[in-house]
Length: 153
Image (cartoon, rainbow, N blue to C red; front, side, top):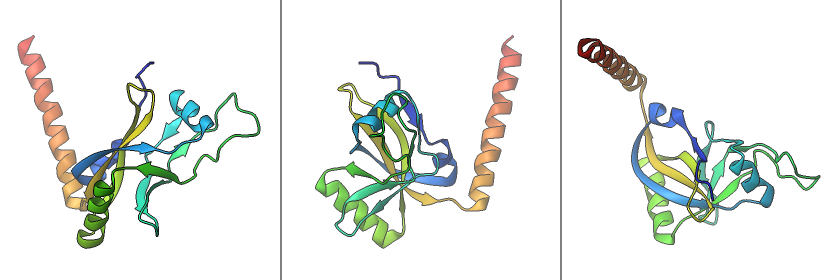
């Protein structure tokens, strides 16, 4: 089984300060997993939320329709249930309610058994000045790397 599917949420590390990471399974239909294996999914606008029963769902995850499916295709932006252990769900729920953190999907991948998994993280939103600091640090690192490269040649 090929393990090259790695769909990332690049905005998450810029918009949020990540704290704890978890790996969750995703409940998918047949055409959804086939579309993910084609690499036709996006989690850039998505977030995670608890429902009334204490179950965790990913909202706004875009999985494009499978190209070879008939009229039994899936909805591209449906809510999809995430599978975690009960103690992990309780910990996440407590953190979200008490400290105002949010749950952000970081990446979707296919594990070695061929199952779709999602890496999620407890995150705290960054302020505007924190984002500017991140941009400044990235630019400084890029300039240092350029100087080192030109000095070594």
